[in-house]
Length: 95
Image (cartoon, rainbow, N blue to C red; front, side, top):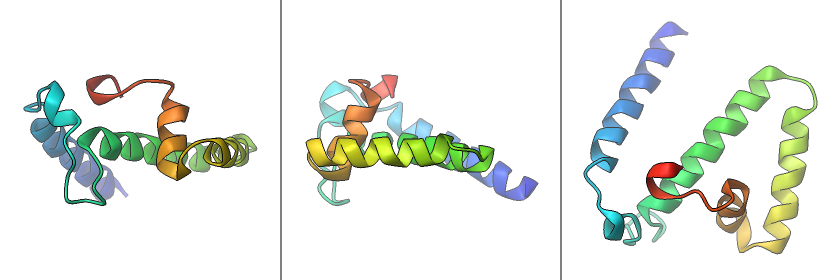
């Protein structure tokens, strides 16, 4: 398990190094990945990491999170819109 944690840290550091070079207009530029922006991708990763952490804690927190995400998805533009709504306006480097 430690190797996986170290790999995750290394991948996170490498991603940060790339993202750290972006200026404000780069964060809003469409990429080849689903036509998402870097902001969309980072938001998706942030929510995924949060969900993974909740799932490891056990209890009702993860189930409550999934319910809330489903509610947001119904009122937003799909999962990506729900992700941005869940982040409450955080974007780019603040995510």
